[in-house]
Length: 432
Image 1 (cartoon, rainbow, N blue to C red):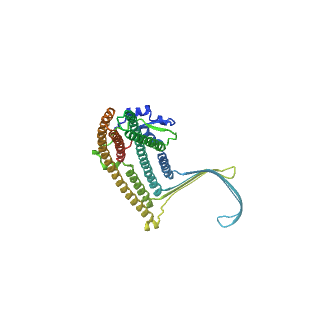
Image 2: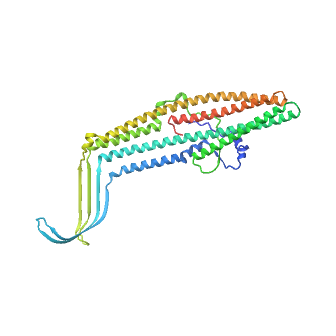
Image 3: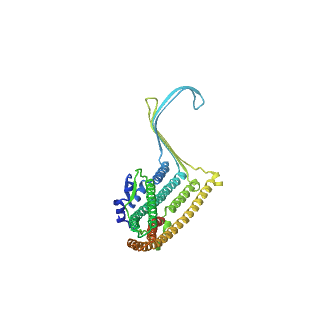
């Protein structure tokens, strides 16, 4: 996977020159895309929850294997009888007897029909839980990436506005001097002051937006520290993760965890269903073994061993005639197949949508980059003529406004492009 991230000069200026100086009370925490990807997979609470559910599925699979092993029942048995008893020929006699037994009892009840197929089904459901975990991880990672780039966009806008505010200060100084010299009208100065205040308002909005995205990312990554996150990657460099000319839907279906999840679910249901079909034909095996000393209290005569092994068939005629449970499994399998088709349709649309987003954002980037070049050149010329007194202030302010709009358009376009690239990469079933 190709990554086009680096510590940029813009981020360095932002970090060292004063973008955060206005918020000196904040604890600044640098963050980059690698850290976001790492923490989204380890700190995110949604992933922690689905990981716990995966462990639960593992425990259920282990439980499904328990039927194989017999039960051990070590112990002591004391019995006593005093009174009248009837012997084998029908005569009643008086007796006073007791016995002692100490040893181990081993019992087993093997229901092959249920045990074998439930164990195999549990294995499929464990795979299902694994695919569910992959789905949540992909969603959490993509959300973290979107927030990260929104934070980087707000940070870049703040930098762009800082530069324009600085140039606006210079224009105000020039106009103030020109008004004092009688070269221009005071109304021009008032207009420039109003524009300057507007830029400062936009700057304040961008700073507030940056804090909100920082809070959102802190929450998503489950970082308890109260800090202002500061992006150290250059988010204004387009990433290249997917070649949209080589997108294959069939390959995506094979890799997407949603499709694998329903495949495992259907396989598990089919195996469970066999407990009502093939499983009925399999016998139940019973086994019991008793071994230990036997005799009167405190003086056993010797060891006694007893064992039993048998097989029997339990044929539920109701299940054979009506097949209610089997029909339930048929319905569950049909529902899972419909859900699988629905998931496939969603995946196809996701891929098409993100392809469209990539192409649209690419076009917007090219147009915004060109527009920014024109606007910056026009603004430079206007400010030069303003200094000479040959340009009217309205022209300078309009050029300044165009620079701001083009800059923000470019930032938004690159942000959307990078977000769409990551979304398409994940939509195709790839992992980060």
